[in-house]
Amino acid sequence: MRLRLGVNIDHVATIRNARGGQLPDPVRAAKLAAQAGADGITAHLREDRRHISDGDIDRLMAAIDIPLNLEMAATREMLDIALRHRPHAACIVPERREERTTEGGLDVAGARERLRPMVHALGEAGVRVSLFIEPDARQLDAARAIGAPVVELHTGAYCEAERAARARELARIETAAAHAGALGIECHAGHGLTFDTVGPIAAIPNVAELNIGHFLIGEAIFTGLDSAIRRMRALMDRARADALGERPA
Image (cartoon, rainbow, N blue to C red; front, top):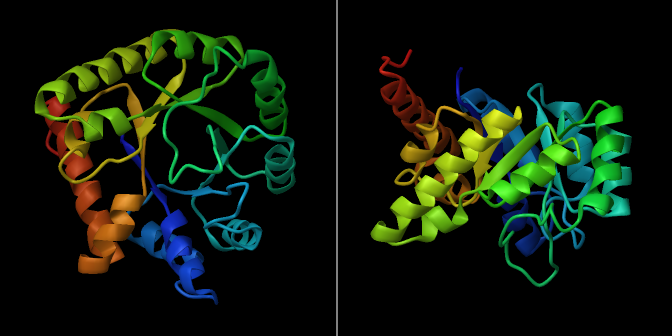
């Protein structure tokens, strides 16, 4: 199975919003990402609208031909927006107004009764639901219990760890991905991945998709968005092919 790449274009909007106006345009970035090999576009519509705006979601839905993954907090407002737009997928993430970026996984085990009706409503609307969680069996079991078909494993601790600890964090992700497979849940991964850290995650056979954003937008300042995405795509494909003992296409 080809490993999919979702490109998060939030921080194109962050740069735009730093000055106001219309540029740089995240919709243009989404189109360029598709041309460079992205399989989907991810956008996080935050409560405070610090980067992606409601208008961006409207335009993305109208402009791109590849799937849109709407990252969203578990709130009534965001559920209503997702049900109105019906993107291909919605990834429910934890969100705190004071955080700079998503700082950890969703506590599905502790919020089953709040999350269950949201997962059901999105699924009934034809939106594929994923839950952004830590690589932890308890959270995976809870995700399965409330009917989520997909989880996205938080790779932040792995990416930020020193060499000795990174091996332990990678092992946690590998174990969680295998557990997701045993539960019949599709497994994605993301947060903080770079050219240097993506290979071992891409090599995990049960991981079907990686979502990468901040690093690619930052790298694009120096090499261009097309080049950054194509290099990431090549590193992912090489790592997956090596893990399977195959030669990448």
